[in-house]
Each structure stands twice: as structure tokens, then as C-alpha cells.
Image: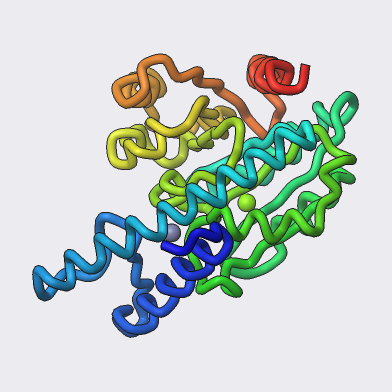
Amino acid sequence: MPNNPTAAAAAASDLRIRLHHKEGRPGHHSHPHSRGGAPEKTHQRATREIKVVRRVLDANDIMADQNRKLFSEKKVFVLNMMSSPGSGKTTTLIKTLGKLMTGLRCAVIVGDICSTYDADQLSVTGAPVVQINTDEFGGDCHLAAHVVARALSDIDLDEIDLLVVENVGNLVCPAEFDMGEDARVVVLSVAEGEDKPIKYPLMFRQCDAALLNKVDLLPYLDYDKDLAVSNIRQIHPEMPIFSVSAKTGEGFDPWLEWLKGRIKVKLG
Ligand code: MG
Ligand code: ZN
């Protein structure tokens, strides 16, 4: 691996994009970092893919450490928000910023494969918003550290206290990529079923808190909230779980207190 971390990240990223092109089945998103992906034809290919995955993740960790150092120097707390598509991340974030921006200077980086829908919605908060379209980086279904580093050139870190990164909607690989953040939260809507923590354990293991969103829908659903909570606890016993409705604002105070507490520990 090259000594220069940026070069290492670029090389790994390039390798990954080439791999997508070379080995991606037509119409399918080849996914060298995931444990699933295209079936292996030979043992040799499997070994090569594992090496590439290792290189991509190593390079990502180097970039993530650089980001973390910069965030510390600039005294910025960084929150990585993850979830499946449609869980209500953006609405939850709009509500959260509405309550926090009275005391904290906030900015948002939002990741999607395509479109500026979320950035347009988030602009109502008045916070600076940078939309990343991963299409330009090979169409990745997650944000990686070098992609976030690039977006930082559009944000004045001296002018903010909190940077929220809204990840690409996906419960799988975003959990594998450190971006240098201080805290990770997963948003899980009650419309998604109780089984998701068991099916996507890495996400729930990696996150520091879970938001159980859309609880205003509970009267209309056959949803066993106790089971959902116990499934989360099975994966991550100590994880704080906040039941919220981004629509009605129900349950936001404990979540905001938790987040403010975490920010205070870093920024004082
Ligand atoms: Mg969104
Ligand atoms: Zn991905």
C-alpha cells in the first residue's frame, strides 16, 4: 500500500470501481466489500476479492482517521445517521436540527446515489447542506471516508459545532465504513417490521443509539414493539433506544438530551 493515505484511498477506490466494471453482472451492482455479492466461480477469485476488500477498508480507515483528526482540531461533533430507505431519516433530521439549532451551529452532508431531494428538504432548516451523489464515485450504496473528506471542502468547519452525515439509505454496508464520526445512530421505522436488527446485526452492533421512528403509526400496525426492542437488545444489549415520531414530534426530548450529552462530552 502506498505511504500517502490519500493515494492509498484513491488507489483502493479506483480498484473498487474497476472491479465493479469488470466483475459486475449486467444490471447488478457488484459489491466487493460486502459478504454477499456475485457468486464466486473460483477459489482464486474469492481470495483476490477478499484482498481487495481488505485494501478498500484499510484505505478507508486511514482516511477516516484523518477526518477524525480534522474534526477534533476544528471542534466539530460528527453524527452519522444510517437506516434503510424510507425510515424517515431526513424528516427526523429536520426535526432534530429545528430543536438543536437554537444553541448549536449545524451543517449537513447528505448522501444519495442520485438526486437532491433530501438536500432540498433539509434546506428548510437553514443549515448549510451539501448533497453527495455517489453516482460520481461509482454509484456506491454507502458513504466512504474519502467521499466525506471531499464534501468538507464545501463546509466551513470553523463555523459549525455539529455536522450530521445522513448516509445512503441502506442497512448493510454503511455500517462497514468509518468516516471519522463521533457517534452513529440507526433509524428504524415501525413500518419495517421487528426482524431487522436480527437480519442486519452489524448495523445495530456498530451504532451507539437507535431511533424507533413513526410510532404514530402503531395503532394501525400489527407491530410488536417489545419484540423489536428485545431484538435490538439481543444484538446490542446496552444500546439506548428512543421511540419517536418525526411527524408529530413525540418522544424527541430524550433523544435530544442524549445527543446533546454526547456533544458536550466532546466540545465541553
Ligand atoms: Mg433521506
Ligand atoms: Zn455499499
